[in-house]
Amino acid sequence: MTRLVSIDIAKAICITLVVIGHYLPDNSPNWYVTLNDIIYQFHMPLFMFVSGYLYLATRKPVKYKNFIWKKFQRLMIPYFFVSIIIITIKLLTEGGLSVQNPVTYSAFYEMFYLPVAGFFLWFVFVLFLIFLIVPFFNTRKHLPILFLLSLVLYILPVPFPKIFCLAQFKVNFLYFALGCVFYEWINIRRFVDKIHFLFVLCLFACIYILKTHIDTVVIKKIVEPCISFLGIIFVLNLSKYIEQKMNFMKNVLLNISMCSFTIYLFHTTFEGFAKAIILKLPLSVMNEFIFVLIASIVISVGIIVPVILHNIIIRYSKFVSFLIGVNYTEKIK
Image (cartoon, rainbow, N blue to C red):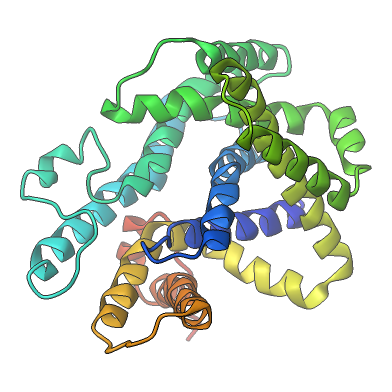
């Protein structure tokens, strides 16, 4: 199968935005708060979209139970493993370091129905729920049904419960289905490919500004998926541009993409350590330069350390590779 380079680049951009989005201290300047809000308009829809695209691009004929078991190993075993690590670290360090969203011992059983260890893990839970459904709709004939089902769930004026991340599932299933449709209908892809990413960025900015001045709930409900979809198209077309024109950036992002799941699982842990250490420093002045410097350090730690960890694990431990859902690469002696 041909490697989907631009999709890999999009994954890398997406995971970088996730790491940036998860750093929002109380002393953030207004421009950074706005940047964070912009990222949250589309970064998780983008992850879902890419997941749907890759699902169809890489699908193979396999029995349903085998498919689900493989997805359980790939998603839920890392979910439980990382949850246990995060809960344990929080319980052990909350007395000596500043712990964000502290937990109690009850978190060890609550994690079976809620991502109490780290709310960001909802994505893994929701993705597994989606994979329980999509094998029944993965043909070109049935994809419109999948899309309509996801659209009905999205616009349904009934709140879903937080248990089992059903509230997040209701909203994000639509973007996974859009990713499937985008892959299957090549004419749509060809049309979108012709739109320059800077034009999409301008359109995104205009609609985002419009949204900030809208008070009507119904109109916001319509505008929000439009903003998300424009953000997705912007990143996809930017990724194609990087693939064709920016070789060094392409290689950097491809390396990040290979470690994207490990970064997703562990970035908040290492960001948390970095933030806790920085809070211990005697900083008498906090201006924008200091903020940017600290943010750059924390975000870099959230990306670089998991990348290093990923490369160590896949070379030295088959068992831990299994626990975090990555492919073990046996060392050549």
